[in-house]
Amino acid sequence: MLILPLTTPILKDGDDLAALLAAHEKFLEGDIIVISSKAIATVQGARIDLQKIQPSPEAQEWARRSGRSPTFRQAVLDETKRLKGRVVGGSELAMLTEVSPEGLKGTLLVPNAGLDQSNVPDGFAIGWPLDPIASATLLRTRLQESTGKRLAVIVSDSCCRPRRWGVTAFALVACGLQPLTSQIGRKDLFGRPLTMTVEAVADQLATAANAVMGNADQSIPAAIIREYGVALNDFCDWVPGIEPEDDLFKGAF
Amino acid sequence: MLILPLTTPILKDGDDLAALLAAHEKFLEGDIIVISSKAIATVQGARIDLQKIQPSPEAQEWARRSGRSPTFRQAVLDETKRLKGRVVGGSELAMLTEVSPEGLKGTLLVPNAGLDQSNVPDGFAIGWPLDPIASATLLRTRLQESTGKRLAVIVSDSCCRPRRWGVTAFALVACGLQPLTSQIGRKDLFGRPLTMTVEAVADQLATAANAVMGNADQSIPAAIIREYGVALNDFCDWVPGIEPEDDLFKGAF
Image 1: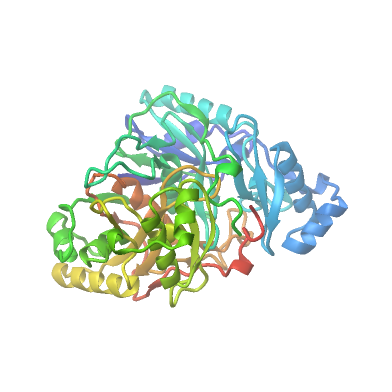
Image 2: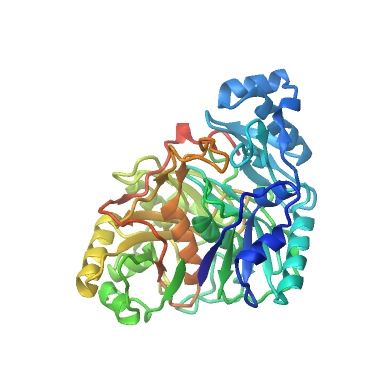
């Protein structure tokens, strides 16, 4: 498996993302393009002007407890509401939000409802594209049309996991491949049926890509996964999550 | 970045893991070898004979609540104790354990204290090597001696994350590279200091490798990460975790 960073100029509102990506790399049949949700949101002009936000007392309180400005905290509360979520915790660094965007099976646990103040101009915040599935579908269609190759697109966000330091990633949306591979019916080396029956294909590929994308000033908003050996298809949706009541982690912490 | 699966014959007690790995792939200077903790435990003969275990009433109760045999549940309770941990939750599939092995900063949240019944003969379970740091050090030394190249070793385990389906991975021990890269002082595209200041290098590489290793009958216990562009050094330790009280996820769920 080959993971190639995809460099672009600094992205801005109105940029043609498909053209910029195709200009910097020749795609091959079956390539999987992992792209950061923030890159898509950026070219869509979805950044939030924090100066236009009036912080509520709740946002003031969150700013005191978990850093950043009251206007950023209000933006997180607003985005949490838009994504039909709730605040479930927080530390000095961030709020922890559990969001349930329309159409997602299960929920997503993310810091700050996916909002970030990195890689946007001062005074702004940026989150996910307003409609990540439509965005992924369009990007895939445009890339396939311009290259003549069958491709897949994964929209990723950087994230973290309990008790671990640092940025890893997960897949928000997969378009063109199955995000979870069932291992039901598969056997281990000794012919016993497997007990962990699902492989988190899209999440693993998003993380692998994130290792070359960087989250600083590298200008690498995407990466190509080549020769992974998975069959592409026409799945295009949120990567399904677990309902909270079925989660191994329920009741812990 | 290139990720190459490393195939071996089915591993067994007493096998020379370094020789088996070196026999199947030519290593290059700077290669990072990700190896499953279970592969190391297997050649060390660290598998647990479940027939020799007397289940306690607590284990009987866990078997009723989260599947598998009472003897497997007792093995998990015993391993949790050995790793100075505790059971913090569970579902119908597994127990969720928080372990604090000697020398680890913070704790690790893992299903079943790292024990597994896959890829061991019927009636046995297998977990981590008894001393993962010593094992990684030895494997690195042996591989470097036999190849004449400077290499790094990451010992990985497969795992999962809250609200997400499926198997991903994390790094237990890193030997020969910095497992976390501080981004303090780094700036974003607009020159602003980054707010997420740590990159989970070892975890991301463990996950990337896991994408080609498979957890079924593929006989791929390891993978090579090539051309990642990180400087190797002499760090060799547990990948540090977060103390529970500092964790963003504290109080959630």
